[in-house]
Length: 343
Image 1 (cartoon, one colour):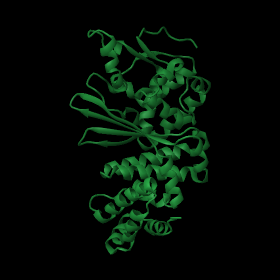
Image 2 (image 1 turned 30 degrees about the vertical axis):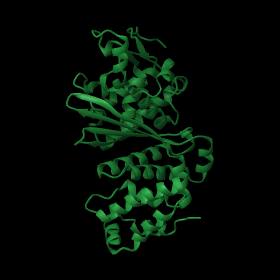
Image 3 (image 1 turned 90 degrees about the vertical axis):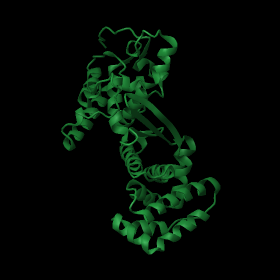
Image 4 (image 1 turned 135 degrees about the horizontal axis):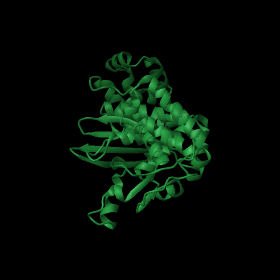
């Protein structure tokens, strides 16, 4: 490729060195994008080989988003520090960066502030105080573009009160073996619904695990015997002028997904958590929280006591009234829960 002359950076995140920066926000988001768009995990070699397909799929992805929101390219999916600018995160420009790479045009930029939160300590430890972070860490345009698209794909919620944005990514070994885009969308819906309605952490995990169980179906046991299925949850918080990486959690949901599948309740659990009951539906809300906790206890301790106790609430008049008023598929939910397999 005919590269433009690259500025010199102390650290350069490039396709050739991408494995060395695995787990950083910028490469995590780029991994989200390649997994979703072309069913391949982020790899310098694979991105180079599939750059044409990546360009095509990125363009089609943004075209579909434009049909729902003509101004989607101006929508910024990340919280920005005051020294950052929304121009760095234009979705249409991100597609151009990806397609430019396929045409042989590669540029190197200073890694923008919202994508370089983890590098502050690196700069402080190894560079003089006079040196700015943007003069130290660089990124190739292809990875920058992928990261912007990955932020849109994984973005799940915004908590205005806490100034927190949440992102989710289902980390699977062979995304091409499943309907990965469907799984990604299901995980985002559960994460958004549970957080928007201030649900519990256990409800979130059980809901995402149910999405995994539904997606993999009969192949789940075989797949998880070879490699774990994990969920990554990233939380970014902006307070005043400061943006922080509040949490970067990776949780193995393999056992929980298998257990939910064995119980035969993946479908009703997904229905309940992807459309989480609001606070005014307190009986229904309490049921979902108790059932989520009971499932985790059952998976951990092989103790079905809490599940039996929780399912007795199904016959409650108040529960049935709230269930019917909130879920169109309430009958399917009831029938599936009553057919739970405990052997």
